[in-house]
Image (cartoon, rainbow, N blue to C red):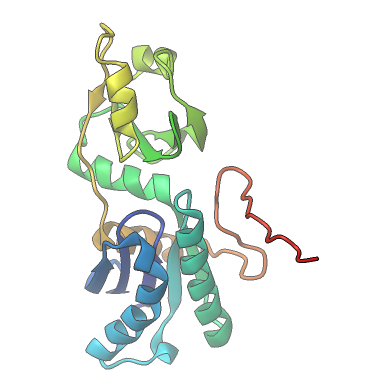
Length: 228
């Protein structure tokens, strides 16, 4: 049985969990997004101590790779890669949108397709569409919403829209006769443990040297001004 650690700091709520195969043993959460960086390392240490295991007992580390908060994604990825490099164990990455879709499929299995939305600035979201088997119908990426977004897809599929970005589109569509279906879905450590174990079993490991967070669009940081 594989002992797998997983780290998630992609969205508002961060979590660190420990699982035996797909069975979640323990999870710690933090809902203060600005404190995610300070939360991760103590949570990892506490999770290992609770089950009287050491980092050397880990068989792999899973991490949500994005999209999501730029800072949050870097925090989790750096922590996961550091452990994997030091312990010579595999890194497993899970897309945030796919993880959200997995949670929705489990809660609402009756839909033809699932469209998670992560809030971005103004009318923009990070989104994708997945089949009930988690096959990609619309690849993950950024999208500026308007009333015609997904117009063709709504006719072809019974789609569930959800996530913290879906509220913006719900407002846009309130006077549209083809009102889509919206739902409340929140993933947790059980969903992440399942996804990480699935990839671990199939040996779908990420390249430790070259794997980066999946931002979906280029990350820009503000450079400091040079003093003269």
